[in-house]
Length: 382
Image (cartoon, rainbow, N blue to C red; front, side, top):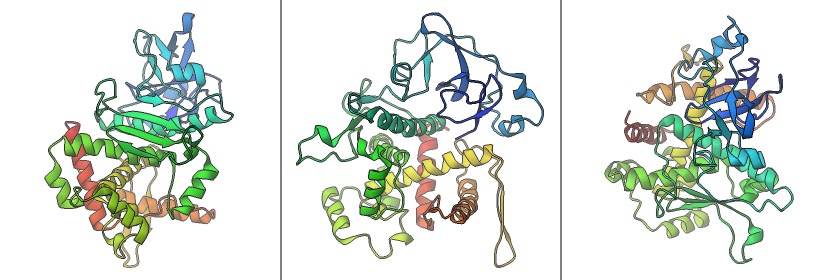
């Protein structure tokens, strides 16, 4: 994800911020521009953008950083059009996206697919919902940057995208709430928003990585498999890399949980779970592709460069001065990703933390990532 700054004062701010901690300006994200901006309230809950501060134009002040992504500069002139807060922003403060004031839609594009939200009368559930929405909005940012179609249940009642955020407290004891995907409907057990419970599940399932944004990126990969592969006429190319998805899915998962991954899984798959079935291989690869593009954009906006001397005397370098969401060739993405993740993992280990990216990418896994890259570009008409 790119970097953002408060238009009112030039202070760097995060994608999730609703208020600038420096000047106190209210912030809102404009999904059609993929830009976070300072906004000011007028009559009847109508908001407009704040004119950009002169600090954003000052040489050497954050401008050099943002000039690396000139297609979405924070220093753009303020658009006078009237805006409204997404209803989930105005009523619950679990969102920070804006919608046009004249729109018939009360919700922003990221909140619109919600079919079931948590029971907000329960203590702590608003906070859990906020964490869930935070991960979902990051996922939607990536989908929008890639130019992918997002077809909701209202547009396609049978296969459109929808979200159910469910609690085990609302289900019979013999019917656990499982996070998963079925025909466009993504279900998330809201216990995943509890860091302690999520970590316990990660350890119990022997996973190296478990996050809310990871869940969303994985499950939405299943949605796009249906849309881009099964319905998109790409089954032959998919099967050549990932295998035959017509094998029994239930039996494959049972075998995976009973016997574990094959001994050589790391030579062919991105994670152990990817080895369970071609559908899961696709979803895991899709999720990692979104991880990689989003993190590389962040690295580029911070001007991150890496140079590491190899045993043979050569230097492995990374300087991602390109837009990973729009580059045609996949090779620069992976060539920059590998040295950057080695550096980030090394920094984390210096702090006694787990690797930021605890995965090893084999050539078959890289080939699958390149395939996802090609499918996305083709689907987006690039």
